[in-house]
Length: 107
Length: 119
Image 1: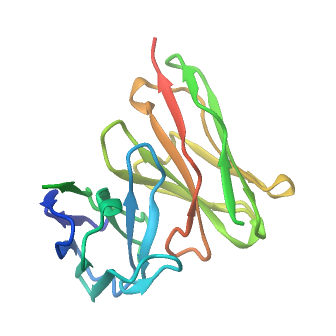
Image 2: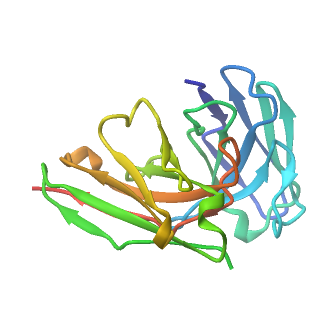
């Protein structure tokens, strides 16, 4: 199985901050990577697909980049609605594995 | 509007059987794969397996193979996951999600079904 490792596991930040979450794959997944946002008690919601594609309706402050084994999700200016848990997922090879999650907390 | 609507919460005893459902609407159900994802209490997301509703071809994660069965009835636009003998460790929230091709991101999710297994 491809292992996905996110860092950090927890991130404390303030409204207006720029934050970056990193996701590393244990083998080359080209750009077959998505980022999801999940709020407590709710289903995940896709933000970014194919490493850098912005899902329709998602604010442009969310940016994805990377290829191969290293990927990042950047939020350019945190808004109150952005405090949530973020997961990366590879869909290059079954089983489609997720990172362990990054909880973004209000500082 | 694309929607995946899942069946309601379940409380079961160990060794009981269970089937939960995921009904698609607002799109051509047979044109998208459905995956199932487990989230244990306070934990992350785990991909369980997927089905192509057009022909019921399935693929499972090795971690779930043999313990769950994924199926679909395209005549009623519904996918299922079932257990023949539940364990306490199956307590989790289960999500269905659709994806356009076998290797694609999950662009729409169900609201989740909470399954509690307790004696």
